[in-house]
Length: 120
Image 1 (tube, rainbow, N blue to C red):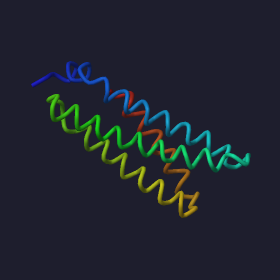
Image 2 (image 1 turned 45 degrees about the horizontal axis):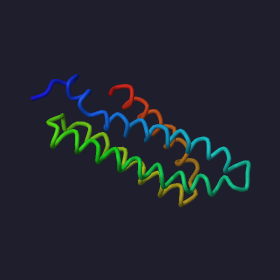
Image 3 (image 1 turned 45 degrees about the vertical axis):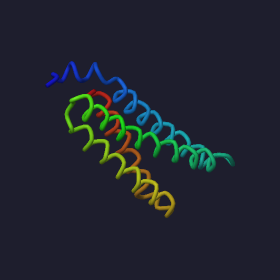
Image 4 (image 1 turned 90 degrees about the vertical axis):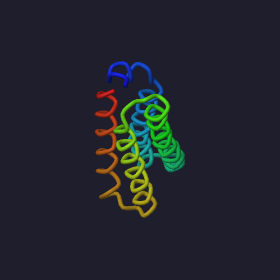
């Protein structure tokens, strides 16, 4: 079985997927500001939501690939699946126009994604 350091170096795709997810969540915060101040903000935020959701799915895929064929820990799959659930809830409350849930959840997701990135 590979050591954590070896596994970490062997699967940069997992780190890239987490970084992409973190970046897309941050860009969603930026586009939410544009949503409130410009006419094109809604389109940008809507497109960004789809990209963020895709990045969360990519994180799940990267975690599975790091675990099964690579012999890594299955723990990142749990984290990635949790992010996908949070992203699903985030999309649902965004569509329902519940900013009192949507905004704090976005901040939580960014913080957790940043933490996951720092741990990799």
